[in-house]
Image (tube, rainbow, N blue to C red; front, side, top):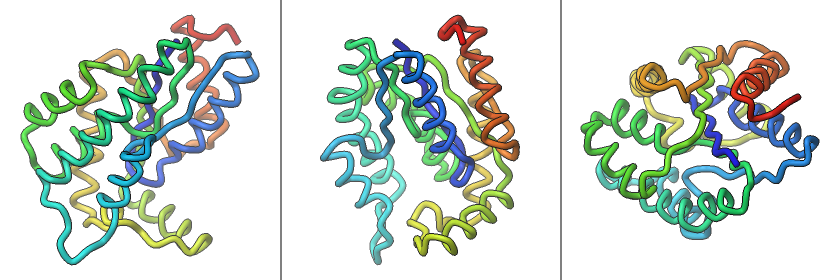
Length: 211
């Protein structure tokens, strides 16, 4: 089956669109799994907590990158590859492009080094399609503030980074999207229903689904 990854800065609507696609595929009698990074496994979830937690001594950029990669290696070996081998669609909230964007674009680590580590941790596994929900930093901040007000959730360490950091991340995503036909860039200011229609049409154009 197919490995579809959803990328974008925080608040772009990745989870909502991913869940809509998951339900549509299930309605078509496909087997699917939804997963996320960092996380997806017991070790991955423990690393996620360490990565995102605000502490007096946060991980350095290189440490942060390696923690993400360790989580990814476990995730690929125990969840993603087995699911694909069992003919399931894998829908994932973030994958290797996030490391290029956040640790490469955001932290300034060499993209060449990030990509080498991505290839090592995934054993060269790449998504069949990466869906990028593009959103301005201003709109992202607005949505995250609304979410915090409604749920009481406190922003994690990455979400709390300065606007300049998030803009570098956004621009890295857009740059990556220009390098491959296996990316679909969506304007995340559109309604979830409209985004879903565009996504389904793209899958039909690829002959991955018939309706």
